[in-house]
Amino acid sequence: MGRKKSHITNRIRELRKLAGGRTQQELAERVGVTRQTIVAIERGNYSPSLEVAFRIAAEFDRTVDEVFSFERDS
Amino acid sequence: MTFQEKSITASLVTMLVVWGYYFFKLYEYRRADVLNFESVQGLLIVVVVMTIIVSIIAHALIAGRKALEEGPEEDERDQLITQRATYLASYVLGAGVISTLLIAVVTASLVATINVLVLFFVLSELTRYVLQLLYYRRGI
Image (cartoon, rainbow over all chains, first blue to last red; front, side, top):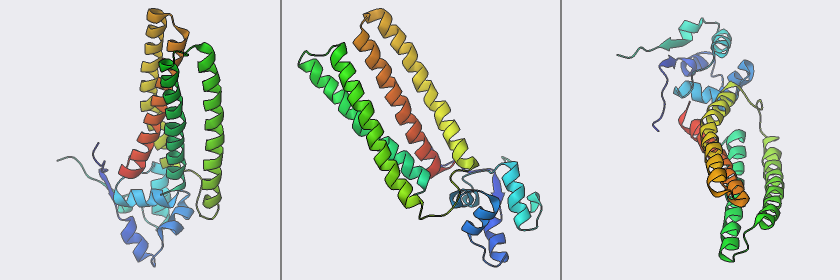
């Protein structure tokens, strides 16, 4: 079983830094998930539900497509 | 390692140790030619009680350390991992049900029937725990 990488990429790590170095733990608490889930999303190991994606985007005052993007198979 | 991973690992180790003991004893009973319904019944009771006691102790220790950590108990990722692992493990259990029916028809042995069912139950639980750990480590 190979490591499953998502087709959905994100800028969460970059946005956390832009937001004054917000930690994964802080973001996780605000969004209502575990820190491990934020880690998995940032690494591309987990694609969040639409609701969590909206919550994350809202935390950075961004739209979902400013935070997440979908990579098509070439 | 997260709380969930520790909890699953504890369940996996408990399952391996306790049910490993069960099948080892079963093998000993068979070699001693004392394998019958009463011996299996007594052994099953011992193993189930052992499983409960070991699980309570292991999870109490893990939960005690969890109290010192932060964060929600479980989120959507944990639930998805549990759902997928349980779904795949259900195939093992399904195969076990069919095998048990075949063994019951072919051998007409209550001891054999019970133990095939127990074996597949243990295998399906082990499959579930291993898959959960893999999903946590490799992503889902």
